[in-house]
Length: 443
Ligand code: PMP
Image (tube, rainbow, N blue to C red; front, side, top):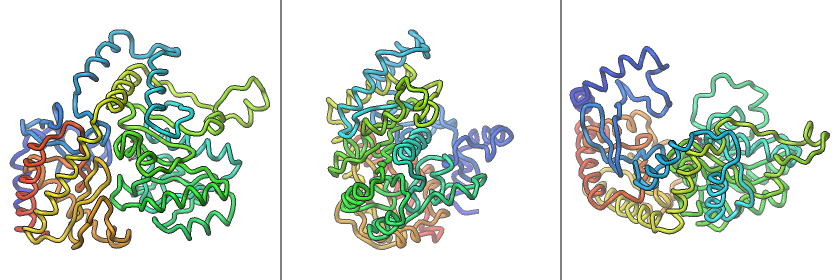
């Protein structure tokens, strides 16, 4: 057994014990695929600001940040107050609320393409609805998505998403065309074949920007989808309110027809939305016409749609983003972290780089390169090849041993409450982790 693994096991006896119970209850002992880590994952007891603590009492600088939902950090006082007050007023009021109106108005204020809004409980539901709306609106069947782009776990969006695809019927796959990123010619060719309802993408690139898309590609997609009458869907579940207060669309000046939002949109509670062009969202509209209601209309139930807890958390969070320089601060800290990682890799003579747009930093080891700005110039195939799952798992464990928790083994999701001190602590932790990886011959 390597020294990293030995230390990980030695430091976390209580997590190991808790995992023994969890293993008999949950498949794999976890409740989300990305939380799976051998020989056992950590159990977290509580969190505050940029930090969290495990069952054995260790403190971490947290970059999982609620899978990207917490741009204001853990347990932000304004959110704690808003949610606490709402709990006492009722968690489900079984009717329309002013809170949902306030929440939608807060979204409209930030997201430039949000003519209309419809709420859901998760990003998966939002992308599923966006696809359904696009199909109903265009009367077409096919979807175009891009290699490795992740849009939740509904059937039509699972192909080439990086998630194990068991249980999905063949017929579903036949309606989806998966294309390489940054290649407009292949998109045009697929659109020319006809019957394309929608083109869907993560606008900064697959897996929160791990395999970057160039902004010119977004502009090109806008032109092509308009020309061929397909609905352009930006999946801004991660980039919404993170890449800029108005998401990737505001940062890059490209307005999609539909946008899916989750994570930050609900201020750290479960919640999501599809927003976009009124005439497409209005496929859900009641028109008092039996023919429309039974055939054309897209139905939309959902017990917890716009529940008041998520509504007040989301509205409070978005109102803070609209009035305070939270994104600016998160991006500033991301810049410091990227620079610090690059310097460290150069000093230690370890091939790799850190890149990312807005408040996300992606660390790729093993390929020597330098990213002058936010974008990594390496082609998708090269970056994909560089991503070795075993190395990412080892890095994750080594960083946990050194007081830092990453998302997915190479991704830092920052918040507006990460500080200079956090960045320094992280870089020290990374130096310790890389030293340990080197000792085991992994870098
Ligand atoms: N789209 C993207 C781009 C995501 O990253 C995710 C979740 N990480 C989803 C959709 C699905 O969101 P949820 O987990 O809320 O279903």
